Image (cartoon, rainbow, N blue to C red; front, side, top):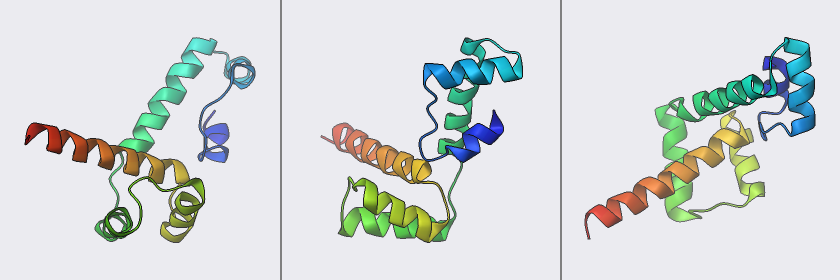
Length: 106
């Protein structure tokens, strides 16, 4: 399962066909596979980025686009050496934190 997840890091969402295959190979239920995938996605999205990478992402966020398109996300991922999934999570959380801060200070 780890190999599948690593290979599909930019879109780590297995459809039911792949969940069934992974479940059979690992001798698990499809529900267990789904739970494992969910846990791995959370683990990836919760890992802290280095200060340098965070600065680059913040600059892009503030100066260029708060909701980058797929092409921009892929360029940032390549430049920073991290997955597009992780970049997308960072932007999603950044927008959420900004909105939450705005609503709390209204």
